[in-house]
Length: 199
Length: 322
Image 1 (cartoon, rainbow over the protein chains, first blue to last red):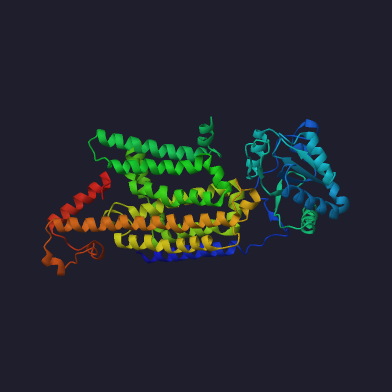
Image 2 (image 1 turned 60 degrees about the vertical axis):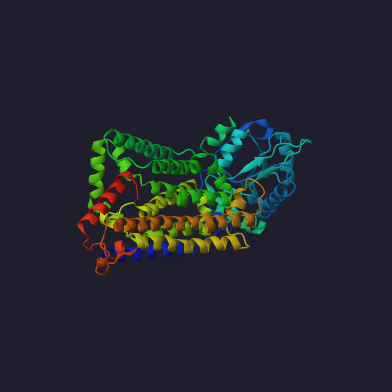
């Protein structure tokens, strides 16, 4: 083996080790949530919104938008998450008027627009419910790389629904900005939303 | 309809489809042309291994399996086991490169050969087949994509996800082609047989370490699957342990499998030299035994031995026999 090749080998090996090492020490940014600005696409969807009207991303354009998938029969996770989001909105005060929460139900059979509207407004006026056909829901969940699934109904017509816990935040221009983990407190989320609207 | 739903790609990629199709068609054409021109044709098992390998590269990338791999950690590890360890090993074992060349239109083949002989490409080839670099790339890619922050991004960004799958598949082909190259060093292979066995066995060590860590660790390392949702209710730690076991056992098993293949070839080659009537008395001057071919590659062999060795190895390149 020629000497230059051996040196190059060592250099490359060192570079790979350094790259792996550095990636974990990169600054996390000023957000508590994960910054997804450069890795996820801008908000885009076709859904059935309040009143059974078809809506697109234009429905939430101009405000910071929080996107969350769930269903109204959800026993624990959805109400907990929506309560956390609502608590964060309360902390924002008047600035909360500049935030939209889009609660997308992956269970359109049970969650009619009327059911969704009632459920959503139970939390906060900023929360809007939406759903869509399976094709529309698949397109949106695929775009944001999250999973959802409904089991076939049992003898009583009951069925389980699986959905992601992801909370996505988009800025007023519809660009993807943050992915909020379920460990983030309402205080931290409120801080993140303030930082986002300030910058 | 259900079958079609399973077979259709989750994320259709023109690049994956055209690369897989081009490989299969060029190989089939290469075999066809060789047969009709009276040239040596790869053994049937080698052809079979090539097609199976290509299928096992295509399936995890371009069927609904990819959807499952995006949402369950162990299914993601199984996908990488196929791309990085198993399917790419099968394709490399078939050593399809000469047949792919024959399958090309003649002018393209000649142009490709000229390009291949050009200094920059030779230099790149020399670097990536340098054992330490090949080892670092192979193991480094496993560690890089399993690094929690890198993994998190890769599972969220479609671009990085594609980059991840491409990198492990291409590196798998490169690494196993280096280890399982049917040619001898004198015929253009990058490594002697002995170091290849060592390299394959050495690769097992870091694979075992990370596999064992993930199989035995009790905390959740990869939170992205919790965030994006699993497809059925599997405990996060169980999912992670299953994924770890796939890295630990089958993936490192492929390394020992490759080492055994090379070992067999080494002994077979040695046996050929013996059968050719090489005088054992000369053993003092040029060592025999498994190390003969490696320790003294340039040692002068009796003419008959050299002829047998050369013929068998030349055929091995064309026909793909060890």
